[in-house]
Length: 458
Image 1 (cartoon, helix red, strand yellow):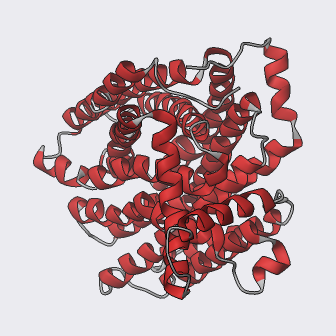
Image 2 (cartoon, rainbow, N blue to C red):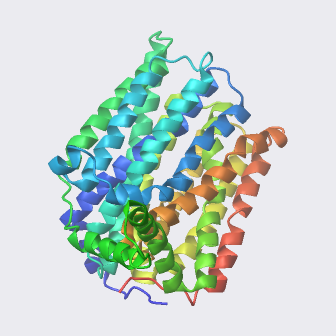
């Protein structure tokens, strides 16, 4: 196991002033913003139209597409977007195409009534999720490629900035969503959520303008290695024709990243890594999926939620993500992962206290702040962890695979969160205790394999 060497605090902090970090911040925001749309905004829209907690929980299955975006990651890595690729570059072309898809989906949402067309609403949400999951493939690859292959410290700092950007897009988008919906509702607009989605579309346009300032690195080495792998596979065939070339292309783009990952880590450790990644943030996802419903049910308004959970939470997230990045650099990513798991479990218990107490803005603020601290610390450690695991020859595909497996645990299992609350007859306190216990299996796996994981953080 290779640990990141310790530096003085001033040396570590100076890494954040690298101009590349600002570009990574924007990329993170682009990645985080769509989660507002299919997360809290969609949940509240359905809740205020009279749909049940279970329905809202199961609607969250659309997040499951994030768990499978690695399946088409090789295509995104190699297929060029007509016209756009030549104009703005391969990575940015795919991001812009997906952003336009999300924008058109918001326009469609703005003319739909969810009570009358629930299936259509969910279908459009699924389109947003697919577009978001697809752009994440390119966003993550472009973010990693902003940093040199042997710049482990900058990679950890970049992970922190990516997380800050993600939460900035998510939190600030949530603030705009909630305040807009509340304002329009108070002024008598019955379709206040539909109008809010049009307002959110403005953010997408602004993000695409900012994207033009993010440069792409030279992809010639990556393309050359991909062609070499294709050639190795095609040489296995006696005859070369369209069919065999197609098989060679598919084999090179899909099997190459997987073989590389297992060869680097060994079979048992590779399986352990995948199991850990799958389970680590399940408890956080259970809490996150139902948190805004919980806030609403115990009596907090959309404005209260916007102030405490979004605005205050964003400030907390930014500060502790940057501090988390410093901790990762000084202490090593594995120690950070253990600490993050313990903090996540502990903070989930604060929501049990809030659930079993009378409505209290102070307790609400404390629970939200500590939850955001835990989420920020866990996310930056997790992003740094999987960023240091990838092979640069397969940046997009391997990162997409690991991130997708992590998302699979959060989305597929957490989709039953609403049903679990209903099964507990609305006992939110017990629900949050169960979410705290969900982190234990992943920490056991990490402890068992802690001395054998190989990280590219020289």
